[in-house]
Amino acid sequence: MAIEFKNVNYTYQVGTPFANNALTDLNFTIKPQSYTALIGHTGSGKSTILQLLDGLIKPTTGQIIFDEHVIDNKTSQKVLAKVRQHVGIVFQFPESQLFEQTVLKDVMFGPQNFGKTAQEAQALAEKALRLVNLPEEHWQKSPFDLSGGQMRRVAIAGVLAIEPSILILDEPTAGLDPVGRKEMMQMFAQLQQQQNLTIILVTHQMEDVAEYADDVLVMVGGKLVKHATPSAIFADIAWLQAQQLDVPHAVLFKNKLQAQGLELPTSIINVEQLAQSLQQYLQKGDQG
Amino acid sequence: MNNIIEVKNISYQYPSSETKALDNLSLSIAKGEWVAIIGHNGSGKSTLAKLLNYLLVADEGEIIVDGQVVNEANMWQVRNKIGMVFQNPENQFVGATVADDVAFGLENRGIDRAEMLKLVPAALKEVQMDAFADREPTHLSGGQKQRVALAGIIAVAPKIIILDEATAMLDPKGRQEVIAAIRKLKHQLGAELTVLSITHDIDEAADADRIIVINDGQMVDEGTPAEIFSVGPRLLELGLDVPFAEQLKAALRQLNVPVPTEYLDEERLVTWLWQLNSKM
Image 1 (cartoon, helix red, strand yellow):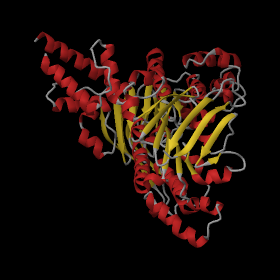
Image 2 (cartoon, one colour):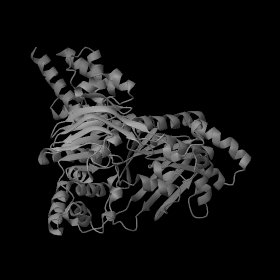
Image 3 (spheres, one colour):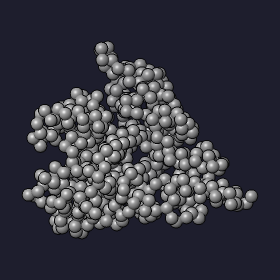
Image 4 (cartoon, chains in turn yellow, purple):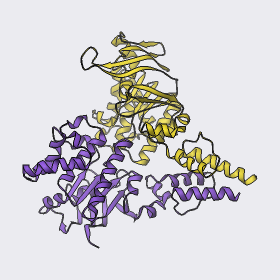
């Protein structure tokens, strides 16, 4: 599913003295099956965009277009509910939203809420639990008896069970250890491929942006200041630092090598690409 | 050397668990040392922090903090010596304002109000949060909240600060702010302050004098950051991060590029790659 923002503005508490412009003139398109990173500081407008994407709020002016659905200030709750079925959001620390007696029941809640029968919901829940690699032995346990990483997987299964075509991830690896973080990010990449999902990742982890995203939106003070590929974003180190955004380690290391006279492509942004370029470079030297 | 913390053969098993969280663990920490304890989630490192403070009671073994055995009789004195910053900035606020929150620990210890009026602003100034004294904690960023938590600890001047993944939930800027505040404090107090940092963050661990690696409730390695990082592949097996130079070496090794086995920091790896290139 493609998403298009057309001249979107959002003002909190419109018509009051506290009116606060959170988003200004946003125009961008997110392509179907893309993996888009949404980055920016606290207060840059990222959370407001998430709420708009999930139909929790409507734009003050402008339009958001999800394929055939157009959302503007006048859109009815009925249409919003329809759009919401296509959008799954994994909020920060999603495990804090678990509540049911068993893992399976918890994951079934979403589909049942959208009108599926118990039987259909169970089939969807089982499928989702397999997608997040949670072994069947845990399905009848209380979600609160699982480890933190497993609880998070249950919460993510709950989102996948509604079979969204757009999956929004808000800092999905916060609080996980390095291995847990890597497993989780690889799981999302795999899900995107298998389920043809459009992924929108909200993150501070530039290493993850460099590793997984194919498109990047940079928000500053409610405005979209850059929309480009990760290679293009990370090519401008001075700009990143001015925005107080981290520079991926591979980019910094590549620059050190370039300073020593090694000719490496500027498009390198992660460790695998750097290793591959170095291997090719060294081989070429071998032949020459 | 004068050890401020002595952990002798301690074991601990959570009532709901089938395995021991800590298994016959022994270690010591010298007065004034900055030690990082690393290990993946569930390795037992946070359990150790709670045992040191008598928030949990060891099944076996003995812990001595600043010359006192950690037990029920001594627990209040021991807790007075240790300040802890926990992982979640949301979970450690009790005051209605930033200043109230910092005063909480002092009130608990029955410090004079006149004294508190001096200590609270001084502690907030230490972490550069003095401008926020009258603010509500809810409106602060994560890094600011953790710095206020740190100010609450500075105000009571403990001999030991334990950071239990204190930066894990912060964005890069917040993380740098907190680490900078701790570094500054350690620099000022020198041997009077012992820092125990339980962390996943490899950059935070690199600041320490010594790193202790814990896995399955046991100490599997200890040494200076350079010594520990030189066993990069092993750290990866234990589910831990390694410095970037080690990550790159691992990626090159996978592509059959012969790389040196000893630890190279970034500068040395650049030199090594450059020499390899010029030889060809």
